[in-house]
Image (cartoon, rainbow, N blue to C red; front, side, top):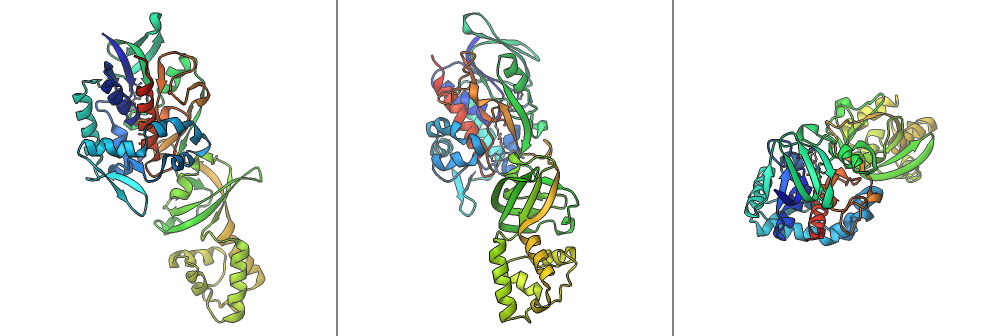
Length: 406
Ligand SMILES: Cc1cc2nc3c(=O)[nH]c(=O)nc-3n(C[C@H](O)[C@H](O)[C@H](O)COP(=O)(O)OP(=O)(O)OC[C@H]3O[C@@H](n4cnc5c(N)ncnc54)[C@H](O)[C@@H]3O)c2cc1C
């Protein structure tokens, strides 16, 4: 059978592409290599599935590093509002968790999301071939495609390549899309784990796992040059630095870089002023209480002062200039060398992938091969935590589906 569209990969990008193409009357099939579609969706949001985020599409564009502008047409063509409407029309409304801006299905269940997507595919008569790994994509005569899989062969007028990235390979995303795209003439930018914690040399906070800091700061240095900075919530785990501050910025961080952490997110000069003022007005105040009033957690203060070799029962008036400087440096710019980033087994997304230069952002069609479309994490797009990645995957899939010429 000759399909109008064959979708390679049954993640959110592929499934939404298939649903919206079938709604236009196209004959569509999804080829999925695992025994079920949506394995990564099941893991999303720790099984609760954070599907999108509050805010206008224009705000979304700032959450994809340097590549956000590529998503403009996708996100305007299929907005967060449209995704919410899709789910409420299908009787699984999304609810907003106010303090985070994240939207989840009202049942907080990824299983419900995946089941719903199966139901809609079935209703729209999308053919789903599971345990079917695509191994070759060939552009053949009459602008059609021949698709060779681990099982049978397929023919299609159009292809939507939506094989995801390389992270969490057990879910099926193992980077298969890159060689498939390369064979068709596309450039692939070196993939790298992102939304991942960073491991540093001599990590001192193993015993403080679970402690977090609101709105901490991070400066990134490479070859002694500052190459970036960011702010966000920091989390200590027993092995590494994590939390949105680290995860969202990990796309820019490389092994061997230096990071300087500002735990309290306060400028060094401002902190010095506060310290000197306090020391002159209430010199008898203990250093522990001073740090606690700044918002530092108690267990951190103990550890921090121990690291600096400063007795924690000292009063402010007893702190020497040298000690003051090491407290200020330690709090505002504690340096660490990055020994590695979390690998694909713990990274939530992949940065890099099929180059955006050869994809038309208004249609998601290849600029090289007619009828070849891309969507989702397989392309060089990766977003922050908070529902941005799933929204982007769905938006790209729908834009591709809307753009296919009948
Ligand atoms: C633990 C975890 C939690 C996450 N939580 C969230 C969250 O809460 N919110 C959010 O927005 N994002 C989250 N993400 C990221 C988000 O899940 C992904 O960005 C998103 O799933 C990407 O969608 P996709 O359709 O492009 O690819 P994927 O979801 O990776 O789907 C690709 C599909 O293609 C199939 N495939 C691959 N190769 C082949 C082949 N050769 N032949 C046939 N099929 C193939 C795979 O089996 C897979 O089913 C999370 C990621 C992880 C790992």
